[in-house]
Length: 390
Image (cartoon, rainbow, N blue to C red; front, top):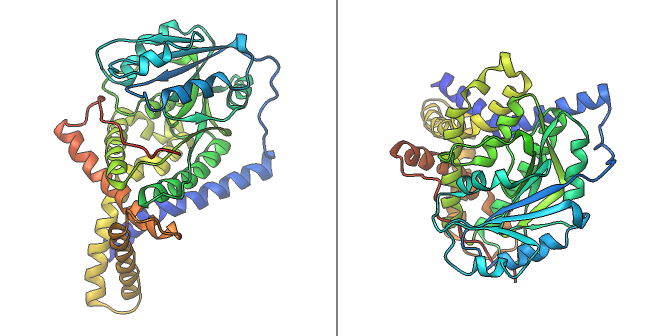
């Protein structure tokens, strides 16, 4: 039980805290040796294509289009390509009001990646930028992305996902906002050390020539696509000054639905990307992948349960240290229950929602595993309802 306790504790602490501290230390060491690098200076703006895949986005699509058309980039160097496979609302009619936008529509819905695969042959620019239909981009987003492609070793650029903070935020909004601030910090350090471990679909870009048709059964194509490019020896860099903003899920139920799909996709990706576990072949990329992603989707959630069970047994038979740790665990789960009971409340100190969100995030991995094993998680998924920013 003591061995089980210490192993479980080590996994949980390393996954959620230890890797961040170790990563920061490695980045500081690299800066001491090589100095802090800066993005290359752009010599000439390349042609880019902004690809937006939308499914029944009539509530957001007009704002998305108008935001896209006001981005600060030479008009003759940017193409707008929107694809709306399966949409049956007013999304297509709204897009057709804007002649600057090229629309590809297909009545059948086969999932986002099938839609992207279908329209990528029409992309002729050297750089392709992907963005979700329900996000708003900052004005300088494209300029801040394309400068990195001056470095021929860069195969892709991941933008930053930001959750709009609203006064009406509940447990979902507070937890998701905190999570993405933490995740963005890790992505920034991962990129500075070597490469980002998985891009977020809200905003990322690739060298068009490196795009490979993705199997339409892939659940989280953005994560899979970015790591496949990194496995070819290219860097996938992080650009915090290129960001996509969206509101949080309307409640924890909707956020859990989204997290379960992502968890199922993460577990699927681990199986498909198993060569990346070979640290002798991929070196530091494997180390980052296992520390930042693979452990979070496999060992960490299981270890939380094992930690509680082993700690209970040890606290029952021994006193002192194990009592204190078990007391801390009981406090944590008490805060989870409190967060659950007030999840729809609009309280001032939203930090109280963090333990609940953390627990929900790990619980979603177990649900994702069940859905994956049963074959119930498909690429055609129900969108999580988002809060409206009024």
